[in-house]
Amino acid sequence: MAVHLDRPTQKTIPVPIEFGARSDKGCVRENNEDSYCAAPEMGLYVLSDGMGGMACGEVASRLAVDTIIEHCRESEVNPALPIVGGSIAGVSDTSNRLASAVRLANRAVYEASRQSVGKQPMGATVVAIRLADERVSIAHVGDSRAYRLRNDQIEQLTQDHSFVAEEVRRGRMTEEEAGNSRLQNVLVRALGIDASVEVSVGEELVTDEDTLLLCSDGLTRELSDAQIAALLAGGGDPQRVANHLIETAKQAGGGDNITAIVLRCAPRSIGVLARIGRLGKWLKDSA
Image (cartoon, rainbow, N blue to C red; front, side, top):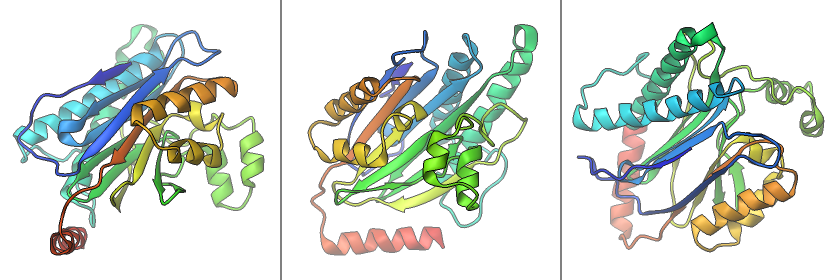
C-alpha cells in the first residue's frame, strides 16, 4: 500500500532529494503485504513487509508504517515527546526518535495481533530512514534492506535479522549456501512477535549524488547486489529506476511481493566552509 504525505511540518530538512517508489504483488502472491510511505517534508521514508497470511500481513505492515510516520510527525510538533524504550547513547536525536517510532510500531502490531479475531499471529519487517543536514539515520528490524550506491559501488547499510544471515556472520554458512537455503524466510527478529523488540540503528554521511534504496526481500531474493547496482547506476528519474527494479525482479520470477523506494541526493550549491561546518556539527552530535 502506497501513501505519500506532504503536509508541512515545523522542521526543515535541507537535504535535496528526488525519489521514486513502487510496490507490486509480484507474479505468485494473490495480495500485497508490503506497505510504504514517503514523507519528504520530514525527510522520512518507511517500508514494511507484512507477515501472517491472508489479510494479517497487510494489516501489520500498514500499521507499522502509519505508526512510525505519526510518531515522527507528532515529535515535530512536540519535541519533548517521550522516547519509547529510552535513548541509545552515541546516536543523534533524529536516530533516537526513529528508533522510538519503530518500537512504538512493534507495540502496535503486537497489540493488534493479540486483539484480532482468533488471535491470528501477525508480524512485519521494517526499514526506515530519515535525512537531516548531511546525514541519514537508519532504523530496521527484519530483512527489509537499505542500500547506498556511491561512485557506482553498492553497499548494504543494514544487516538482515534472519537465521541464514546470522549463520553467514558466524562463518557457519557461505553466502551461496544462504542464498540456496530453505530457511531464508526464518527471521530472528521482527515487529509484533514480542511486546518489545531490539531496533538496529545506524547513521551515515550523505554526499552529493548518493543513491539510496529501501527494498523488501521480494527484490533481493530475485536480484543480486550486482544487478541492483547496475540498475541504480543506470541513472534517470528515480521513479523510472524504481519501476525498472520491480519489473526486472518480476521477470526473474517475482515469487514474493516487491517494493522499492529509490532516493537520489541532488547536487547542492554549498561552499566548502559550510560543508566543513556541517561535518563538524555531525561529528559533535555523534560524539
